[in-house]
Image 1 (cartoon, one colour):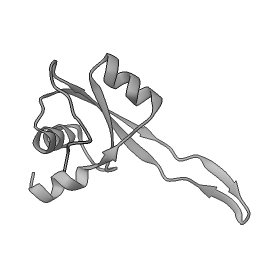
Image 2 (cartoon, helix red, strand yellow):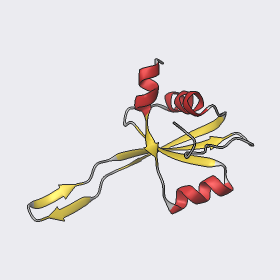
Image 3 (cartoon, one colour):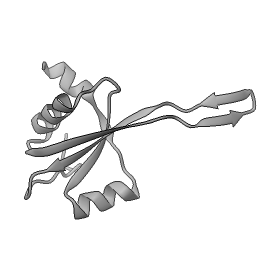
Image 4 (cartoon, helix red, strand yellow):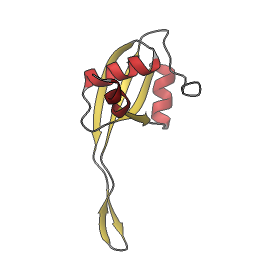
Length: 98
């Protein structure tokens, strides 16, 4: 996998109450990822960009909600999230990452 693809796989961290609890309890981090990203690609991207050891990757696809607007029915975008379990003793600090 080339360097350009590494930057396109991870779209950004997903911050929520559930993600914060997982980070504290299970040593997991949640990222929004590209719709066509595969588990091995996600694992390599996280290991290369953050210099951590990844134990496992779980991926979930979330369908966008249908919403009513003034112009009729609309739909929010679908998203794909990756739950990444880090090896014990490893952590990602998003403040210090460039």
